[in-house]
Image (cartoon, rainbow, N blue to C red; front, side):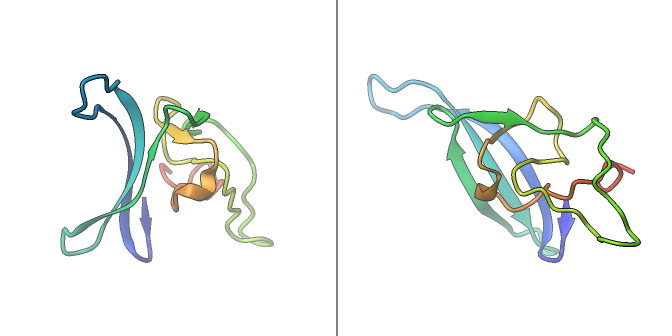
Length: 107
């Protein structure tokens, strides 16, 4: 996903602490890469105790009207990722993927 700050990506990963009884946890992270290949983490959240939702890429929706409203922003969902990519249900915890237009990310 590209915005005025650079390119962003969403990832899921599994991590486990080094304590004896630690369990594996699923995490969501959002990364920002600027034009100089410098990466910054904008969000890291454990999804273990958080209700998660998949992305909405590949679905059709009609929240977009260039002539009247401009870009429709849906802060609760990610429209750039597939349903396999798990996000925290509270979409305000990450910054990108919220433009609710079927063609915005993947034409």
